[in-house]
Length: 330
Image (cartoon, rainbow, N blue to C red):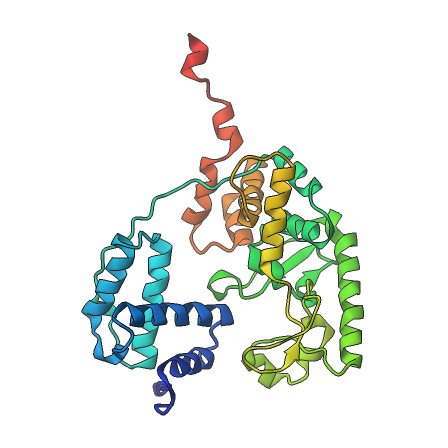
């Protein structure tokens, strides 16, 4: 089979415009584009801001990544994110692969058990929330969704007939199916009807488009205006899409839900350090406590390796409730 020729950016463009061109050619998420550009700029400024990356070598990348670990004290995941951005720069933009040339000082990744709420604490947390944020938080806990998976839900991803939520393009670009709690149906149906009315008003005003992946947009030119593609949780106001320049209705910002969860935890008197992802951790742990097979839970969570799912076995309440403290035997 003939190998497809590699895409190379327009040499007349400035470096960061070349980076964006290649990122968009390969359909990277806009959030990833922003992150990669920030790391590439930080790398350039680390060496004075005047040396073009093509003049730097693998040892310079290694030096920068080691600096992040030793001086910057960044986490292992943050260092890996910077590495991915620079590997992309040299491999896909500059056509100077460096994969096998670098061995930086690695940030230590310390295993930490996830913070999990008891079912009573979940009830108190959710009771302290109201409106759409309360609905979104219940979806996170009821279906084990990640924050952005909930934020990016589209109308067609909710199957009321089968009580299912379809997660499209989750972590790692993977699709999966998870649970739609039955006691959320009425409220979620009302939310969908509200979105449909809003979409109708947008269409009447000459708008009504939402972002859809470029490949789908080319294949189905009218899909961006269809009801099924609309966000379940749209923003209050339309905004200009930074890539296409079109005025569209984006989904809500994740920061609103993040703040609402923190405020609710304070109101509920929960002293644990929690965030939106704590609800996903709690979903997983409570299902294991109910006796759900760990392989089934792995599929619901979208984990590539069951070892990732096994971390929840370390925080299951029933595993330690049967034990007796040596102090109780005195």
